[in-house]
Length: 331
Ligand SMILES: *Cc1c(COP(=O)(O)O)cnc(C)c1O
Image (cartoon, rainbow, N blue to C red):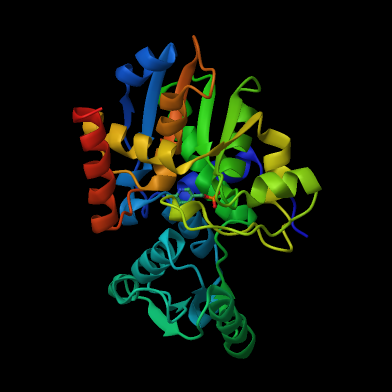
């Protein structure tokens, strides 16, 4: 087993991925600071990252560190969402062949989006598990290099570069609010932030409809949970049966862990649009949502909340805005 990623790996990642990612903006949120009693609240806008989510950071760090032989064979992944897009984007720009395995249930527009970024799409199977089976076969039969979504030191170090950007711009930050699913984002950011400032308070935000990480922390090993559909679809999914890195790192670094509900997610999405004209996907709105509900105590603190992505389904998004707008105008 490789060793856990360190701050040095995050610095190396920053240099390696420079040509593939942009430094995203940080904006002030005085309304939310006022409502929550925080000294200050800022949003880090990874929804403005290339491909619409932070995932391109980890994918670029992994793919650009492959040797010549691996680059020629090409990479393979089975994620349908932001990770699949990120792998397609990076591989396409680096001239490396990429295959993204999808199940037959994935909407055609998603497959098309991935093709347009320059990747091959392999549609096989009726579920995510069957798509994963196809992915394993491609790996074994054709020697393609797997690019996993979170449990890899290079992926974790890539996501950690977000913390470097935040601490350079806002070195007084005391609290980081981080969406949490497989844990690559939290592990990388928390490790980097704590290495620079040991007093940093790390809040992990999972969804109550898919609490795989929380249950795994309780059990002390990866467990599978039954999950229900959520507006925060990027936070669905387990943490992998053979988790080597993110589970121990999340356990080490997370100070506070909250499960966010669907109404809170909607409130966060609406607030980000209504107040800042920011289009955040459900997974990215958990920080705003939990501060609005008052279920977290950030009084007097300097808070940065990660708006991790902006990949929304237009119809579902408009429905959330419409519903919340009616509630605001006819309470
Ligand atoms: C993947 C993703 C997350 C969760 O990241 P993990 O590394 O799986 O914890 C959060 N928000 C968005 C938008 C994502 O795409």
